[in-house]
Length: 206
Image (cartoon, rainbow, N blue to C red):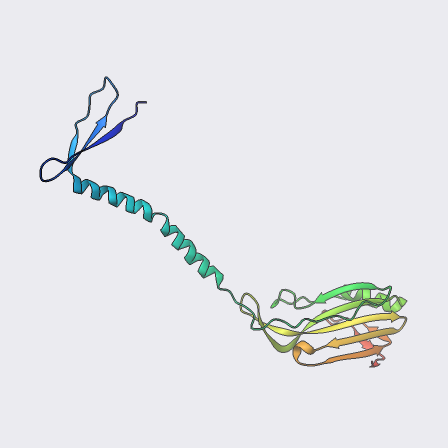
């Protein structure tokens, strides 16, 4: 395929100059006629083309900046949640894990009896263990989810088995504006109601 190029000549004679544009054709082909334009008009056409080419880049940049600004705004918590430290696992014991009922709030997780099996089995055998449960309170923590739902303050209950009939229950209500209480218990009864936590028995203040 033969290529075709254009040559530009400027005639500055007389009171006004003109610009002549000719198309160069390969040897053997009929030449195309040349066209003359006022120089000022031709320069204006080139200027408009350069200006439009220059403006093509800033527009997408402005659009991207606007999108970033819009996406940068999100719901933030009104205050950071209080950090809660759990009582340690008894020496030589096993960590039975943490059951956080507020995980995925506002959707709550209902625990089954299997969740407490590690704890109840350990109390029956006297094997040292620790089990932590986090429950929602009726107090607003002042925090919100990314969807705008208010998050209640959590109540942290730590069960620790130190031996046969030796159960220590620590309830931490500090995030809900309360204090920390400890009880030393001898037994633990498992409710048959779905979602109900075990009930300590034979307890005395620790």
